[in-house]
Image (cartoon, one colour):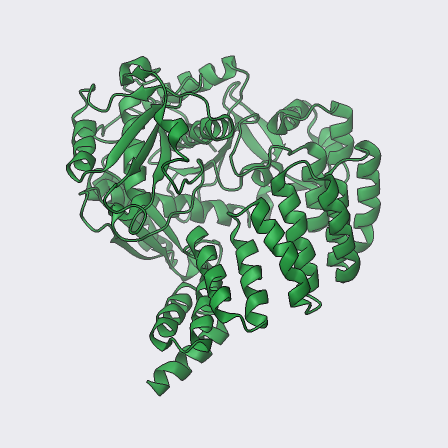
Length: 576
């Protein structure tokens, strides 16, 4: 149940909240203790102190690890209390989100046709399904496709009308993953935060795709004392900072921040490009700059960050498009701020509705914790990590392969082809089905056919990768390499491609070359325990004992279940 009563702001410093960070920390810790669950193992500060902008990391406890794919969450703020509260609330939203999906009683498993009969006017309009992927097929085609498999329908709140409707929530999870999950001190605070983050992801995706000329915001022409202090902390350390107006016509202001350290880039630091959205321009800029601090490792610790909303750039030449644009000030950006968070949410929802977007939300709050958490989505919003070729047919086919019994999937794909003849995704799904049926040789040939009809480099790369994967299943390591190299040349920022290429080289006793592949995979995902373990094994094979021990220790710390890493670590430490 979502309650959106009045929610006056009681804290204004770097973020607008219903209570102070200290009160949030106390409330979350009390909830964790009361629950009796091992959700939080540790919450510690991890920044080096160079910038003076605190960053915290919350480490998952055993109960959280059992339901969450990640093991740690980051939190940032202009004060230690806000950063600590941020890391704790990040854990709350993720834990509640993944636990929510395991609560089968919250869902009704039905095809679209069954749901239409059961819920009638209380079913989310199918036009919203089409809007969510920008599909131009007819509502009848969409309904027929959605009728091929059951979806998980759940009661959600349409914030525009204030009416509860039933929606296939797993459809939107396929599109957005956990983007849109949130936690707050109240329902209104949580949902507004989610809405801001969805707007941020949307405009980031548009800017990332189109590279528009964005106005450059003067970093000195503003009077918010927190923002002034934040900017000065970067300037004092010689960090180059560029703020951009990335609002892109949305009712909420979005500020993008580009930052790099000329003295440590690229040896010890990276170019960081991220964005923040809030109800006021100053708060949006603060969110963007504290996010920079969270990702940058103080521009001196050789850390690598995994990009999400915006692409990651590795050279100054690549960011040239960002440095261009007319000058502006924060006063030129839209304002949606008021003294009441619920009122801000109401005004934001109304403004988005005027642009053709509806905000939907469902409470994911666990009774055992009592911290308000939600999952929010806005059909029609973009997301950078989602393929631009998403469609009703593509996502339905993906779920057919993932959930349908093998003896039923082929007939469902045939029906999908009747609805969407010659669709580019069908050969790929038929290849996946053959692979799932245990025929890697047949699947490899089908993936080759699939590659020829894919619409872009990203999908061609995936088809090439799977050709290599099929060959590795048959121990054809040498034959797999050309396909994996082709996949990497088409899309270099997918860690799985580098991982499998490294495995092939390792199997061929090319240990130094394999190590480079695993290092590239780790540069894309520093938390990949398997790539760290594989790198350690390469060092074992090349006699680099100290490096091997360091990598293997790090790997088993990240994932204690990697048995071969433990075995080699024990052998090496006993020898030394």
